[in-house]
Image (cartoon, rainbow, N blue to C red; front, side):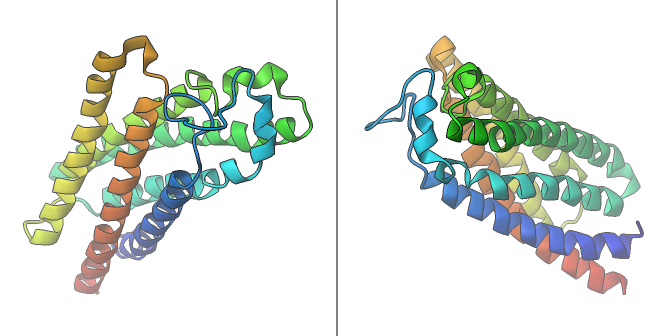
Length: 233
């Protein structure tokens, strides 16, 4: 794709990324915890089959999250298409890491939406408790943690790929760098504090960090791509 095409696509992808990340965050924050360390009332326990009462409400946030994840990969491809040659390696690494993160997260959410949801409604989820989002140390949490950790590392390489000396590009690098530092640092701190009792504490932390980062950089990149597109016309 030519840089002008990348600028047009990047402008739309960045704006939609910010919007879908914000929607996912609002839906996730307003979904009460049903199990684990943050559950305070009406908690459900193993094998989590009582969660059928919360379908589809507890799964709504995953739909915009899936769109957000795809848009993140598209956005990093647009960044890679417009960076200077001396920053292209960082751009390639960021895009590769984003693809890895997206693959893990999309598979994770697809299992929840296409397998767990109907299985819960039909009373067939007894053997799937290890994959349930309500299991605080299950496969769902593990894949989310890996996916969003890798996304956080991608932020760091994206920061290195972004050029420009103006305030907008400085802000982009700062937000990407802060997001990477928090995504990685919070895992170290929480793992040291809780060890095998970590459960979904890191998942909540890294989702909040990554989605907030995507909301901010999505808005900034929409402006940056639009400006760059106008300057190249």
